[in-house]
Each structure stands twice: as structure tokens, then as C-alpha cells.
Image (cartoon, rainbow, N blue to C red; front, side, top):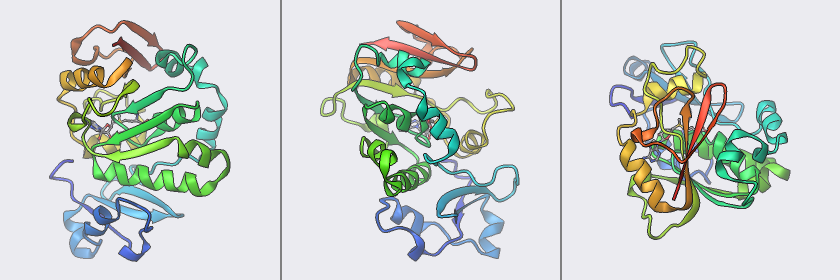
Length: 254
Ligand SMILES: C[S@@+](CC[C@H](N)C(=O)[O-])C[C@H]1O[C@@H](n2cnc3c(N)ncnc32)[C@H](O)[C@@H]1O
């Protein structure tokens, strides 16, 4: 996370749900006051029970959260993943229930979709801030019950750096990578969540290590999400490609 972007919270520690592993991280953030508002560009708050991230000096970047319960997510969940590009890249037709490691979890949309298709997904997120947003969304999905809770039960979250993950101890069918695009390379229409994350998070500079470590951890394949016209990760040509209108999935067979 960028050192120039300190974050404040505008809630009391008692409001942080006990079950959040992110509680110590959230509690350690400075409370938003007139004094901290000067030095902080971002602030976390609870809005309608959701942990949300706001840019204090940019009204267009308010209310970013992770939420698996939205109508948009419900629409996506109704379309079988194996018929979509992501499902094809994962090879879901040949093997429906995979063990997947989402090594760059972000706000968890892709991880939740993969878990909804029946896969057991472990999702790792390096940034404690993004992990807190993701964990908050997963707890709300568990509390929502029904099919949301069933999907949530297939999704395990880990906070940490995938590059420090012991590839020998953890074996997965598939490793999924969706590293940050360099700032400025997304279209102006890029979603506000990604715009805000691009401001806050480190740009990916370990492409070769990510791909090599992915290939060591995957028994079958590594799937990499790229912009449609982006060069392949670490300039390594994939075994297969699935292209959509804005994104592309590159598949590296192990
Ligand atoms: C583009 S976002 C992923 C979006 C995600 N696919 C989704 O559906 O929300 C990339 C995320 O990967 C995380 N990341 C990048 N390198 C990582 C690493 N080595 N280990 C764990 N997380 C990493 C970043 O912090 C960022 O949150």
C-alpha cells in the first residue's frame, strides 16, 4: 500500500464485528478527526452495515466495498460459469469441482463466482485493507444464509503474499491470477473500485515470480486474467487464450 495514502476509520472499535480477523488492523487505524482529515486521503466507514472505503478528497470515489449480495452479482450467479469465458479457461466442463487458489483475491468477485460453480476456492489477498473489505463481504454472505451461505462455505480467505505461500504444502488443480493493471492503462470507464484500488495498492512488479510460483502450485493449470490487448504476463506466451470484449484469459498448462 502506498505510504502517501494513510487511511482513517470513522467508527469506534466496538462496532467492528468480533468474527473479523481484520479487527486488529481496523482498530489500529487512526480515528477520523479534524486533525487526521488533513493528513488522510481515505477513510473506512460502516454504511448500511457494510465496510466501505471512501476517498476523502474525491467525491467520485466514495462507497467502495465488496458485496456478494447485490442484484448485479445475483444476475451473474444465474449464468453457469462453465458457459462463460472464465469457466472455459478453468476447464470446468472437463472437471467441475476443482480446488482453486485465487492468488490475487482483490474484492473477491471472481473467487465468489468460482465458488458458486461448485469449486473449493482459497483466496489470498496481500493488502490488509482489501482483505478487510473482502472478509466483511464474506461474513455478510454467511449471515445472509441460503445459497449465499453455501457458496461462502466453499471460499476460504487468507491474508498474505502469495509469493511467500509454500507451494509444496498446498496443491491446487488451478491457480488463478488477476494482478493489478498498471495505473492509467484501464479505460476511463474502469470501475470506481478498481480506480480506488489502483491509487492505494502497489503496482505488480513481480510478474515472472507470480507466474512461476503459480505453475509450481498448480497441478493442472494457471489461468491469468488480462486486459484484451495487454501483453501476456511476464511476456510468456500462454498455451490457450479465451478472448472477450474487454478481458482475456490466458491459460498455462502445468
Ligand atoms: C485486480 S485485483 C483482483 C480482483 C479480483 N479478481 C476480483 O474479482 O475482485 C488484484 C489484487 O491482487 C492483490 N495482489 C497482488 N499481488 C499479490 C500477491 N503477490 N499476493 C496476494 N495478493 C496480491 C492486490 O492487492 C489486489 O487486491
